[in-house]
Image 1 (spheres, rainbow, N blue to C red):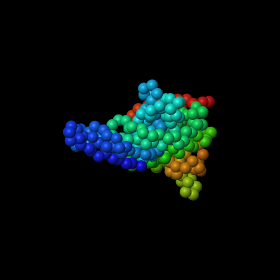
Image 2: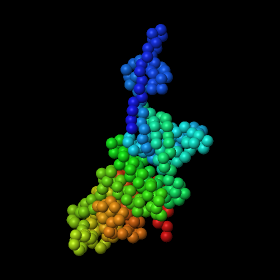
Image 3: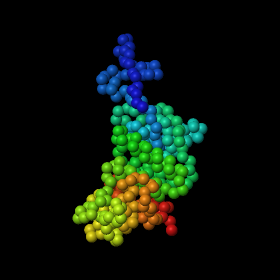
Image 4: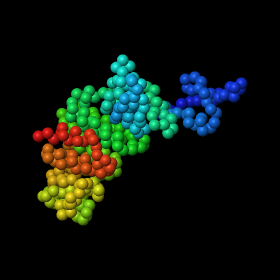
Length: 304
């Protein structure tokens, strides 16, 4: 929900000074020029937001970066965010959902957080190291990208669903994979899994009825640079490519097609491990940088 701060200019005839009266009824100095009047006007926005990042600011405050349901990502100072006595410390925890009311000036880096109410805290995520690492990976992916206001709810709903599932599940490995697939769709960079991106040959053959199976019994490659799968005949040594065995590719295609966790093909541990590496390479190429949270997540997820 968005509204404008209502201000009316007042003029002091004796001093030629001007003021503005805000919605609170208080007076504030006003320079009188059209440009300054425009800069003074602020939007007041009320929306839900998920905390993606926190940073210390002064002795008792912190800067929150949060993904809103309605207006993309925002950053602002939460006063008392490090103080237990203020009652705001819990609202500054990573991954919590708050109801925010904030004002925003045009071209300002930080919004002014006026009110903040904790809605959901997901305690199990902070009590379980693996769940925390998964949630941290999700938020890093979203911190790397631009999120237009018109698409904000899609990203917000995706992250909220993933964090809620993490909080209630025993393992986060498949939740992570589903999150990555849906994020690829939102980014508009879903890989081509139907034909070889190098030679354009079909990757699939009919098995029985309408079901399809990989043509080859040897590994394929997911090539991030070309945005799809290389058949075994076109595989090369490339830092932007990662190998996928036929079973991993079949599960990948089935899950990308349905985006449902109850698809007919069930993954093995090796399938999920291969896909973890392949999608890491894919996102790394897309963002042009390493994802720091992934190394810890990988180390924790695939312990023998």
